[in-house]
Length: 526
Image (cartoon, rainbow, N blue to C red; front, side):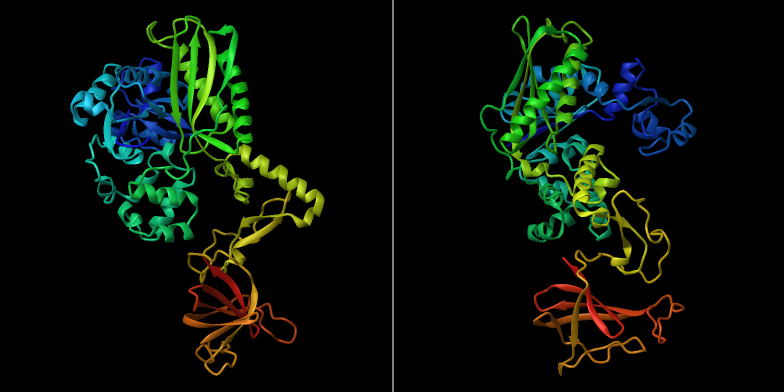
């Protein structure tokens, strides 16, 4: 979606939908639960002290009149369809990001109504006619328009970056439909680095962000600078990717539509895989016996999986078939279902992260696929040859990882929550080579760490393999004396060692470990 964008946001939609389903007044306090915690609540509930992430018992203690409902994305999508249909009557090109949030292009709309401000008022009136509160925002690109909608603002052309700059860095993760699953972790890291506002993050160079963070940080950085999303990866879909199903007999029940939708989803993703692409924007179309067509487009931050595609088909068809009035429902059974991927990206975006985290958390389907692949490798190499990392306790970076054979209990060698005084502060090195090196002084003599915990001479160069680098900076050494009671044969104290940090002439930073008269590269900072 290029050019100016309208964002239409319905606050607290899961709570609004839960109240509407049981016909509760929107003035009553309502909260939505998932896994025993509040994930959404109405304005009346917030006024009584209820907050997101609060436990059920705490929320009820603060507001005894609180009405609780379980999270149900199907219910949210079904009840949001009349709102989308009403907006589509005014402006046909509508994209649903999630139930409660939709976007549409501003081109032509502002011209038709006279200005963007008037068009925004018209949109608010249309949604209000459905009995739903909403706020509308306008900006040059999608994310900024959504943030503007949360404040009911029209951002002048070219002013998006200035609008975002003073906002807290946490705003980058406020809308889950526009970011990856690990965006919260990225925001937490940026906060700990001292970046308090979106403007602070935007001030970093794109090169520094691309070389120091994961892929989602690149998208977040573009967002912080108010640049269009997916401008480099979005592409027109290859031909012959549209899939459709002639419904015989015609479909008039949600369960039948869900069954057909799952089969269509599998067919679509087989075609996408063959074309080496993944879908990020999908149009679901239905045709009734009378020939009338119904269409809705879903936009997603992450490439759609087969299950996610099937869910959106079910939500959408359920929304059509379950309209509250005859005018909202299709004029007859559905005889044709069609899926049209209107935006795709390279299938590399679907590559699963091959890390231990995939085995111990996150999406269950991803974890199971990773586990099955590792089990096959383990069968070829042997039980002890395939290991997974477990976060452990320790002072050095290597000590904070315990490698456990796949299939064994994921038990750490030591407790990571213990105090561990003297632990190396973050950020941690990216690579742990444990390669032997020599540290030399200005006369090319070996530099050692004395019994008093200082360098025997000022280090000026480092010899690693067959090459020698000059040192432009160094820090330390920091002596450690642990397990002093565990003396090796001959009286040597195996628990005495020291660490130092050095910066090579090529700007690489190394963490060095000195023990028993020898230096090794314990870590390389990236």
